[in-house]
Image 1 (spheres, helix red, strand yellow):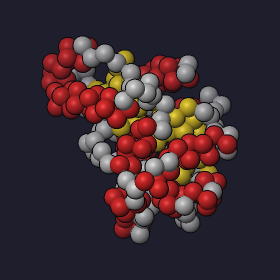
Image 2 (cartoon, helix red, strand yellow):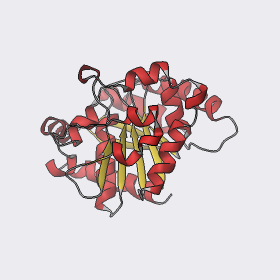
Image 3 (cartoon, helix red, strand yellow):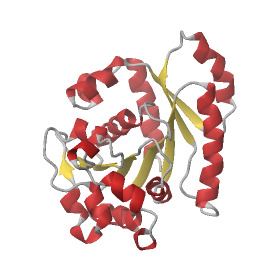
Image 4 (cartoon, rainbow, N blue to C red):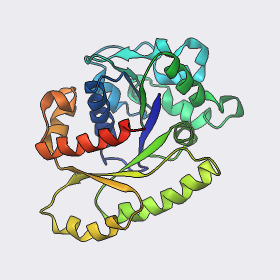
Length: 253
C-alpha cells in the first residue's frame, strides 16, 4: 500500500479537490483507494459521503483504535473508493478537539501508524490524506506516516517563499528518515494568459521537485457544488493530460 498526503498550511489552494480527483483517477486504474479526511472542516467528506450519516468519524478511531478502522470507513458512490470521514465542528465533530488536546500526548504517538497498518490489512492499494491548512501535531503525524507528501500551491511568489520554509521544517521533522518523499509539486489554477503567473515561472523552474500545472478548470467547482467526483462532471483536455502524467508517476512507486 502507498500513502500520500496533499499538504499546504494555507487554505483555499485546492488540496481537497486534488485529493478527490487523484483518488478517482486511481480507481479508474483498478486500484482500491481509501481517502482520509483529517480536516475538521469536513469538505471532502461532504463531497463524497453521498448524503450518508457517518456514525463514526476518523476522530473516533484516533481516540480508540480498538473500535476498528473498518467501522469508520464508508462506501462512496464509486466502486473501490472509500472514505474515513471527518464531521464538521458545527455537526459536533471531534477531530479538532483531538488534534488540539490529544495528538501530542505520548500515548497517542502511534495513532496514525496504526491507521496505516489497519488500512493495509483491509486491502487498500492507496491511502490518501486530505489535510487541513495548519501544521499541528496531528499534521506532523500524518506526514511521518506517509510515503509521500505532495504540496499543492498557488502560482505566487509567496507560495514559493513558504515552500522553502516548509522544506526546512520537513527535514527537521523526518530527521534521518528517507520518508516521506517530497519530490512533486502541484501548482493549481494555472492560466497561461496571466502575466503575473508567467513572471513566477522562472522561479518555479529552479525548484528541485517535479512540477505539475493544473489548469484553471471550472469543473472542479461544479463537482464540489454537486457533491460528485470531478470525473463525473468531466474535465478539460489539458487537465486530464496533467492527471495522466501525475497518476503514471504515482503508480510507478
